[in-house]
Image 1 (cartoon, helix red, strand yellow):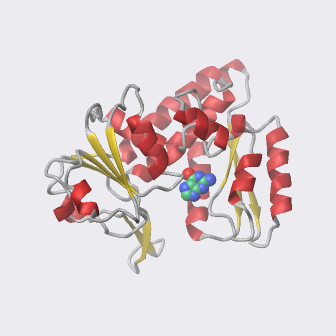
Image 2: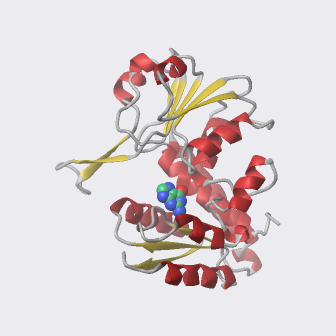
Length: 293
Ligand code: GUN
């Protein structure tokens, strides 16, 4: 069984980015790529994600800034922040951390972001361009999964990929990316969701199983074909007295039993999550080089 090690791979990609930042920006007297994040409210998972993003920016020599606002921040004010960042010539790309508080319309905020600074790849222009296979910012988690599969030389062409979960952030875009006529894609994709009867019927036929249901330990060994490749996107904080943070991360897949049956698997933590951050850095680099027109 091969462990698809997002930790080692993300470190390797970060060192490649660090070298490029030095050579193409700092040594030429250009300002470092700048990624900004907007965080509204106190959601602990979002706080961790944004803190990790800042740390990763520091590691590769990017400039990073975080705009923090309280839970009761208004939609109107948030739109003004987006307008400000759209215009700010010092910022190459930015993200608005999701989920937003209930009183703010997420779509309205995302649609206000300049697509050329939308390093999350969530704006309808980027989603549409991705669908048409045109240059665009790819959403970070699916982009990270694609990179992981590619760098581990996991063949996707002609394979049956089963995706569990159809979120806008993961399930839907990864289904599209893997089914496109493109290098490291060309797969036959089945997208299962809450209305799919008998999910096991599909998972048992999967050469590559991508699990993004957001349900702790939903995938067990009896649902997985022998020697399948399993990608676990789940991220659940389990309270734990014996860790510094007070919790432990677990995925949607029961790792201990599934890892004995599959040919390759991503661990949680140390798998897809770290690849997501690295993908955001790659998108920011792309934004700062004005590669998307
Ligand atoms: N919340 C969970 N994942 C993401 C992500 O990739 N980007 C943003 N902006 N919010 C998220």
